[in-house]
Length: 98
Image (cartoon, rainbow, N blue to C red; front, side, top):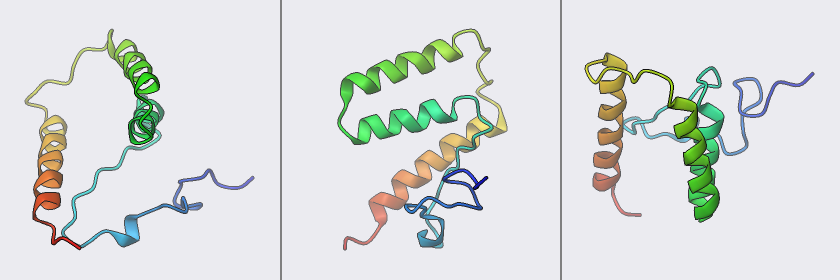
């Protein structure tokens, strides 16, 4: 049985890890995360301009997380996630225009 698409053993043809600039921030969502598939679908729907499908997927994500206690805002993982997000924005803003 072949390794799943997008795994280390069977990289996606759009895998970008090797193309990352040395200073380019990145964030990995692993399959072990119970929201991973829904978050990736949401990203795809938004990128494809499918607002209705994106709205529905976001509602699904909100329902999946409704009964879970939120991660405390002082959680190191929570804080680092936002730090990565901010670093991505700064990196993109400062990236030389090609």
